[in-house]
Image (tube, rainbow, N blue to C red; front, side):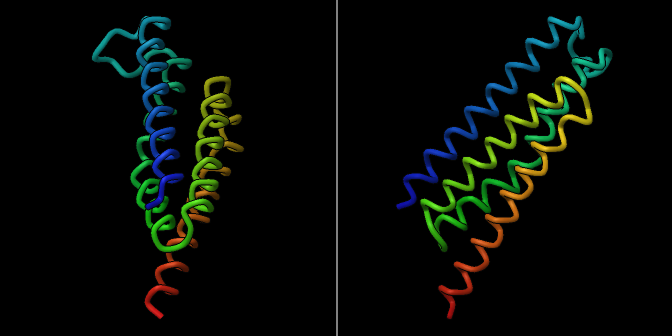
Length: 128
């Protein structure tokens, strides 16, 4: 059973929940009244952090679990932590300026590529 991957999954979901609360707080802070999702550039950057994470979670989570099941729980969980770290950097950078999001984005994208490689390698090894 991939226990480490389960822990990383919970941490990823908790971080997503944290990001969602930042969007709610930004609505108030920047005076963007619901249902509006635009208006103040600082709000829009925080909102894009949430949307970008939501866009990447359907890529990250299956790859995380496939890599854990077919390759290695510990290695997949470690790469999953790298993904979360990249998402944290993405959040911290993007809320300051659009250009500062790039390092975090590259880290999390690299983590997904590594998980993809782990999933495919493990599956091929299982089939052979």
